[in-house]
Image 1 (cartoon, one colour):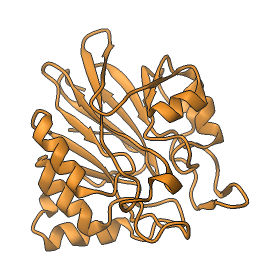
Image 2 (image 1 turned 180 degrees about the horizontal axis):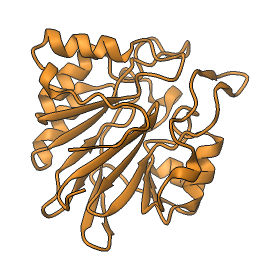
Image 3 (image 1 turned 90 degrees about the vertical axis):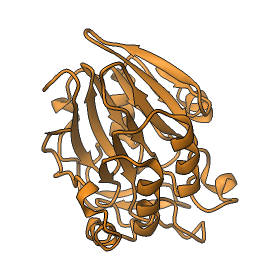
Length: 256
């Protein structure tokens, strides 16, 4: 792995290991086996287990947690993984509920992580988990932008469904080299609308952020994802943006 590259391992659903500047950053840990998860009022069905077990992870430098309130972004085994990290960057509400090692980041607030060879600055960026007005039901979420000298700039959308927020982000951050987009058009009965990017909205988000590489995740592994990876690939091809996509193979590292 070259010093200025990004290594990506898609573990399943939204869970991704990003290795950047010598740091290992885990996004939205989910390591439970398949089955029904959640409560009596909000149950989700997990269809596939993780491509890597938690024991196969390298030592983590941080967890990037878009939110804690949904089991497809943080499950029981994921909480155990989070507890082993020196810091978990997340929303203020999630940090309040989780306690240590969670640290709250308001939108546009940054933390610099220091590795052996590089520093990576993590900036929280706006995200909306569903249509306008859904936050009282769904709760707050965050995305992240990762920057560092000599390193690719990486945007991690989190469970954002709003391309217009991606436009706002693109106007305020350095040019993005890699966009990790959570798609899959997640749907639940509690909200009338997609909770994550539809394939069409993912195209709009890709155009807004302007990254030459788009890594789609959150398109498989759960029953409430209403669109598949194939749906997203078709939408990007129809828009003439198919060359941007790097569709990850679960559990197989690749470098950008």
